[in-house]
Length: 200
Image (cartoon, rainbow, N blue to C red; front, side):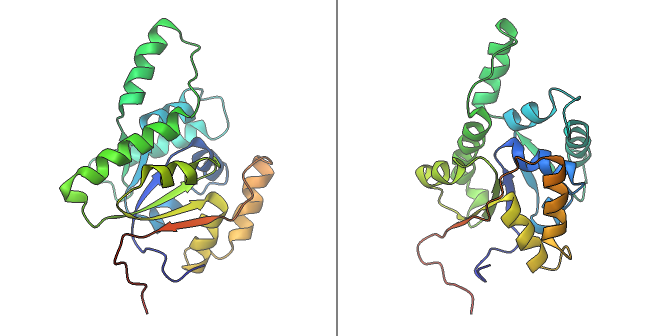
């Protein structure tokens, strides 16, 4: 993996796949061992926890609740978005509504606002995803941030490279045992702002 990988980014999870599969492997804590705070769009949190009988849902709910506590050393931010608010309003009249790509669009909408905030100037973000549309969404959004976009499996490889875990393959086998359809790709996309200097 490239040595230019950013070090302690805000870590963004734009779709439910990484949360569900890491929860099934008892590995949600790895997100904080690589990133700083973890940001999940309100739509992603809702999709991952609205049916607590589904695999990983209770673990994700508990992880979000623990991370939302004041002073948590593993902070989780559920980002309120316009898309999430509109969905909650729409669901009042039609509880069965399921908008396509709502979680991904919600977090990218939030990211657009994030980069406009002066207190985020110079921040880095790491995006962990499984939905194959995410890299294209990120490119089209044109984030003015140093951004690394990794599949869950690539994230595990990064964790092994940094000594956070002994074996990415062991974790991946646990994920596949619970969820055979998990995205197997090891994909990394890096975007750097103009003037970025690769560390020597």
